[in-house]
Length: 528
Image 1 (tube, rainbow, N blue to C red):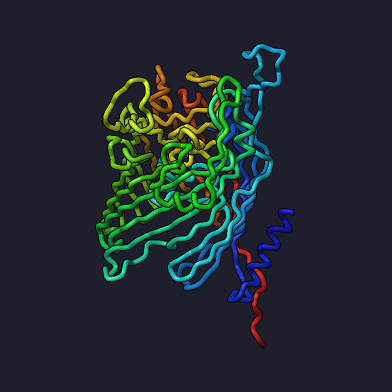
Image 2 (image 1 turned 60 degrees about the vertical axis):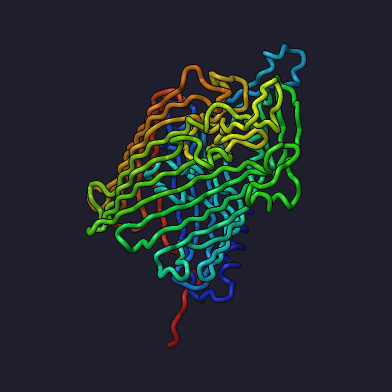
């Protein structure tokens, strides 16, 4: 079935009007072999890899084909497909089984071994470009629009850490000149709506004891960014990202019992209400959906030799208080250096992450919380649950954080959490840490990268603060060798170490062998 689907897509694309008799696209394959000492791969072997490798042991084949957009053409189309499959080790989670009525409640727990599917579709999309606009439909791996995908610890809103979300997206293909500014001001805009498809994953990993499930929810993302003329030595960028989760059903559990069941979908109007959080939804008491975003600010200087130095920050917000920057120094702060030629060091990044303030420890609204005799006349903003929500899913896809991987996703909570050992998973998003990364070249054929970070976390919200914070140090060193005699063939290796309790001590290694090349169909034969 999969082969027929791919063949049909290729045939359809080749038959589109305007396609020349000679059609070229790229194909590739990569073999990943990984081994580790813990349940999961060490931090830097899984972080910001689009959810492809998470387990300690992997023998995985990655096959892909694509035809990217040609930005030099007024009209163009593009497509891509990527399939992954193979072996990955499984991990035992804890699950409460209420059907075991003949046993006491504390003995109704079972082993629940879980791991990635044997085969899955990583990417399947098509997109069309006309002038400066593009429209994309399908599932595509997307990287951060603001920080370096290889060197940064990760974008706070969308980092490329988790798998993608099937969506419809429209926007500018790149920054475009704003009329009447003579190129001094450029803009980038996009809007998308998608649907989470990890319901089976949620149902299989949830422990049905305490917490909530939110299957069937929708996703939206929008971005507006402005930058000054990039051809000048000094340029400035200011932007705004915003994402939202809405719809689906919410099932809440306590002590192994389903205590609440809510339909969050209010109809097609919810898609319009998610553009800006202005309405009030009765059953939630707040706004439709869960909204979060970042203010993105960067300044870049290019030296005469072409080297660039860039300073940047992302201010994260989850509701009105942090949107107006009442959350102190919370955010990502970074410094990046890039060299425009191959040398011992071609790029370096240093970052500091702080997500501990959350606009303070108190959240109070007289209209919603006038109970307990508080008698507070004014509203108090605080307790911003950055990556979680009372009704909606945590900010994860297939268990991995969609924002920075420095915040641990629920995939890594197997039920041995020291705070709440029997819940459905806690992302440690009250976290503070720093990250360093360096990349470079050794001769003409070898590239290397080295990364290190230290993280310390205090639990999730102020309600569930850890008495004893958890912390971890992570390190990785990797290199790849390109075979000159076989263009497109490369061999890579990496070793990574985690030391600490986020989630545990781990040592792992990853070996990759990859090959890519162009393929031409229907070669044109000149007339004799």
